[in-house]
Image 1 (cartoon, one colour):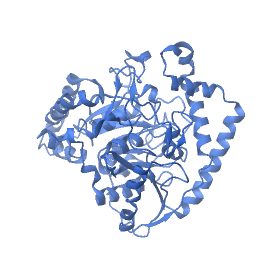
Image 2 (cartoon, rainbow, N blue to C red):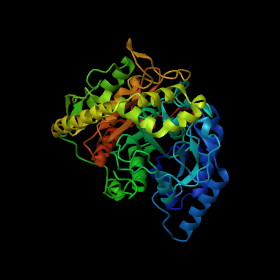
Image 3 (cartoon, rainbow, N blue to C red):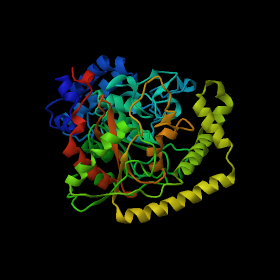
Length: 472
């Protein structure tokens, strides 16, 4: 019963709880049993509050018994990324500097999940300060890919993706600057949605007017993503980039007639090196979109300045957010984090200004491109999951990577586009490693992205292939 229940979509579990066919407490116990069994193998959940979770589940059951509506996520267990502050629960940011830090407030995304009835059970692993698409840190160690324990799960929302894939939680939150919701979703055969900046307001946020770092949902199916967005989307006065549309837009039906919809097929985003194992899986997906009725054409917007924009603005943000900490704690910070902060310190005003001008021009070019195309299809990651002992990829197809994040250009080129982009399961390499497909929409057209992703998911059903360790 535990296996069957815990690998159900969150929408199905939520419906069972609401119908009182199963209690929130029973759902929690089933997931806690899976955590006890599977987490020692993968190291996805790094802080666990069993007593608090049982109290919260019991309160949901009591509210339902009184005929009250505890919210759209009533009784669904959730674990929060260890970058998101959780009131009264340890939040380490994956750093030994904060190994014992317990915040006295909830980050906005955590507060909204709780308010919608989700049952907080703990925290999911992340690399130090979320830096890099490989989840390991000196506080908790590495998180392993459930499809192959010798491989990485990606990052930085790696613990969240693994916990979902294993059925240890049905919904999760994450964040994404350069691919941190999309890369681990692709590596773990789940769904991660980088929403439009402001769709899920970020608070606290040391860079409230920069649109690059966003918070968002992860789940096993597209409908589950829409369910979570009903709780976490919508404006907040503390977040100046907030989109004013209410979260209720994500309660609409996801079905859509896609005949005649024009899609830009971009298997390498204009010339990026892509591992043949990824290319083979992605190429086979083109026919699916054609069968849905889409007009699929090979095309890529001019993203020639995306690398400079991202590298400069990322370094700028790292210095802004972590520079003072570096002055005090350099010896306890990861070398790549130190490098990124120092890269920010080396920037001149004119360099930042140039990046902002290039960004404005890129957005204008993208707007023109997306007058013709409603969607762009691309790979999530340029390589399949790699050995968990390897900190990052240093070359792809013989092309050397200049730093620890350059291998993630297929994601971070899209981060600077200010567009919604979802990672959905696209199939598996010959040796059984998941590959993710990225569906990119027009600015603020988040619901449309969900509609195409839902149609693709319904046609392929890749999400139903769970890790073997999670099905026994």
